[in-house]
Image (tube, rainbow over all chains, first blue to last red; front, side, top):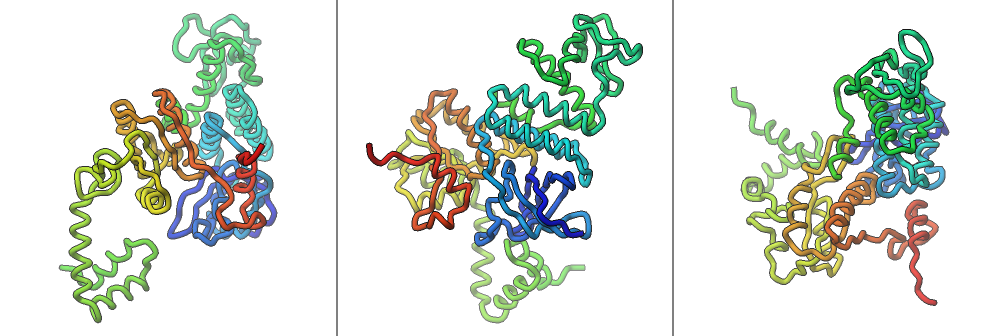
Amino acid sequence: MRVTACTGWVLHRRPWRESSLLVELFTTEHGRIGAVARGARSARSAWRGLAEPFQPLELGWVRRGELATLNALEPVGQRLTLAGRSLWCGLYVNELLMRLLPRDDPAPLLYDHYQVTLTALTSSQDQAAVMRRFEWHLLTELGVMPQLDREAESAQPLVPDQLYRLDPEAGPRSCDKPAAGTFPGRIFLMADQAKATDPVERRQLRDLMRLLIEHQLDGTTLQTPKLFRSWK
Amino acid sequence: MSSDPLSELLTALRCLPGVGARSSQRMALHLLERDREGGRRLAEALARAMSEIRRCRQCRNFTAEELCHVCASTRRDRSRLCVVESPADVLAIEQATAYDGLYFVLLGRLSPLDGIGPDDLGLDLLSRRLDQESFEEMVIATNTTVEGEATAQYLVEMAGRRGIRVSRLAQGVPLGGELEHTDRSTLAHAFSARQVVSG
C-alpha cells in the first residue's frame, strides 16, 4: 500500500539500527501507525530533527507488513512551542494515545481533538482543564466512556449533591457512604465540559477521569503523570 | 564443544556501532593476517578499559579514578555546573568553549514513554550536590529534542527551588550558515530569540 500527502504527528520515536528511527505516527486518515524513518538520524539526512513530537508533518509511506517505510516527511508549519509544564502535558497526551489507541484504527474526530488540545496547550493557562477535555474525548472516541449523567441501574438523572460510586463499565451507581471511587453527582455531570473551577472539584474530576483511564490500562501505570508527581 | 575462535571474534566485533557481518570479517582478517601486534594491543586496551573505567563519583562522567580530571581539578570554577546528556557532550564543550566550571553527566534524558525516570539519570545525586555545594549558576546543555527540553524543564524546577540561577544554551543560526538553508524551526527560534545590538 502506498500513501502520499497524509498529514500527521509523531507521537514517539526510538533509535533503530545505526541511523534510523522507529516512529509512532498519528495520522488523519490512517490513525496510529508504526513506521521506519530510514537514515533519519544520520548527519546528512534532510529529515534530521524533523521527526519530533509536536511538529505538524506531511507524510508519505509504502507498507507491506506491520511497519510502514516513510518516503516523504515534510514539515507543514511551525513546531508547536510547548514550554514548561505544557510540554509535560503534551507528552502525557502522547502517552495516552500510545497506550490506548490501537494501531491502524482511523480516528479522524480524535485527530481533530488532538490538534485542538496541542494548540490549546501553547496558549492556555489552565492546562488541567485542557487535559480533562482530551481525556473525555479520548474515552468517548474509543467507545469506552460509560454514560455519566444517569444512574447505571435506574437510568434516573444524577442528583448533583448525591453521592455515587463510579463503575468504570456501567457508570455512576447510587451509594450512601463516601469511599474511594465515590464522587458527588455534579462531578459526573461536569465531566464532558471540564468546567470545574473549585480546587476540590477540580481534584475530584481529575480522580474520576484517572479511574476511568486506569480501568482501560489493565493494571499498568502511565509513566508521564507518575514522573510529574515525583518532582513536586 | 568449544566454539571456533574466529567465529567468536566475528560475532564479538559486531557489538560495535556500524559493524555488520562484512565489516567484522574485514576487521578480523586484517588483524589476523597483517597486524597481530595491533590486535593484541587492542585486546589489552579493551580489557583494561572495561575493568578500570567507571563513573566519576561526582559528575558520572567516565574515569579510571574516583574523580574525573575535571572534578579533581583545583582550577575549575566551582560555582557553575553544566548539565549534559552524554560524555561526548562534555568533550564537545571542553574542546569548543572556554567554559571552566564543573559538569554533571545524565547519561540519558527523561523519557517517560521509554520508562526512563529521574533515578536512571542520577538526579538524586544531582539534587544532593545542589544542596551540599554552593552553585550560583546551572547551565543546561541538554539536546534540543522534546525529551531534552522536558529534562531541561525538570532541571529548571530543581534549581529554581534552591534559588540557583539557570541558563540554557542559545539556539540559532549556525556560524557560516546561510539563512536560506537553515531549517525552518531553527530559523523561527533564532528570530524570536534575536538580540538587540543597538538602540
